[in-house]
Amino acid sequence: MSTSSQPAEPVARVQPRFAADTAERGAPPTPGPSAGEGIGLDGAEPPRRRRGQEHGDGRRGAGEQRTTGIHATAIAEPASTPTFAVISGAQVQRVLAGREDQVVEVIDDAYRLHCFGSGTENPRSCFLRLPDRPSCRITALPASIGGQVGVDGVKWISSFPGNVAAGLPRASGVLILNDHDTGYPFACMEGSIISATRTAALAALAADWLGCARPRPTRVGFFGAGLIARYIHTYLVGTGWSFDETGVYDLAPDSVAGFRGYLERSGAAGRITAYPDAETVIRASDLVVFATNAGRPHVRDLSWFEHNPLVLHMSLRDLAPEIVLASVNIVDDVEHCLTADTSMSLAERLAGNRDFLHGTLDDVMDGRVSLPVDRPLVFSPFGLGVLDVVLGKHVYDEVVRSGELHVVDDFFHEVQRYASGDRVLHPGCPTS
Ligand SMILES: NC(=O)c1ccc[n+]([C@@H]2O[C@H](COP(=O)([O-])OP(=O)(O)OC[C@H]3O[C@@H](n4cnc5c(N)ncnc54)[C@H](O)[C@@H]3O)[C@@H](O)[C@H]2O)c1
Image (tube, rainbow, N blue to C red; front, side):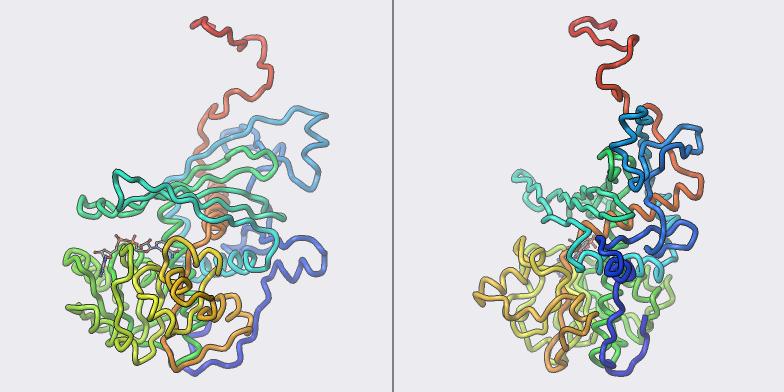
């Protein structure tokens, strides 16, 4: 990743590694997992086990190597029992912590694969609203990755802002991975770390590309100072950014104090300033990170942005549509970003068109759009399930490799269509 403070060179697009292969083979693009070589996506095996490959506990795996054709062989010999593993947050953290550069590579590849236009499915998120708890929601983000990787999955993540007052993080979740060939879920893992990590990794990736268009920011301001702000700071620093000044603004004094403590411990924040209001943190920062839990726009004064900062609008609903319309806007995915009452969707409604969108991060990486420097530059990522599933699969692979996969015995119990002789169930008979 570039760390230059020079204005942008013409952007040379690095083609997704798997996309290049695809062009040659005429097959869908396939990010490979990383077995044996760190965390990159290229050139590896699917995460699921192959027939005959044993778990550490001696049981056989569920999956069939797809290239051999599972449907043909399933007729000849019965499928082995699918297995199901649980991966804790501590295990997820052990795999990911301190590997910011490598995780950004994984996210970079997964994002480009998504933008490549085939080989992934990333339907819109499904929001479960809770009328009796209107500030809360639980969201499902399903995704599928084809090709050699061949894994499907879903992130199921809660947002309960009231948790923070009780000393718990706002978000909690799980990630389920499904076997490509059988559909059987094969792993459930703690999802909030994966979610925060993929969010921060994409933010760092975007900052790197978008930061090239103007003098590299040295004064960062965090507007909203919760868990996502902490992960983004970690990822910026972990991928080569350094700051002379770090500003913090949050409505909650506890959040300011907690984030400040984290910044001091990180030793990578430069001078730390807690700002008393929204205007001063924005004016004092040439990189502004919005990570609030605001449900509707609360920043309305365009003059606060007259120094044309780079804005990572991670929380998506802070900026008034008028500010969006006056900015250069880059998103991760157009259709996703223009939903769910984001500031982008409000801007579309106000303008009656999408002309205010300059393009996607992929467009920037590919050199298809230029980035004017005479306006604020706003990156609004909706957050894509495909990133969660790819990163989750990577975590799964690494845990398998470490020999620490905890398989739940007999999780899938009813695995023969007509049952075996000793397991025939007779309705109404409690002893059967
Ligand atoms: N775009 C993505 O891919 C993505 C992914 C994950 C999370 N997020 C978003 O990131 C945001 C932050 O998540 P988190 O887990 O850090 O939440 P959090 O609850 O830990 O922190 C949010 C902070 O924002 C503060 N805040 C709320 N309204 C504010 C306002 N008007 N001005 C200043 N501060 C305000 C709160 O006091 C709180 O400290 C959420 O909106 C979440 O939906 C986005």
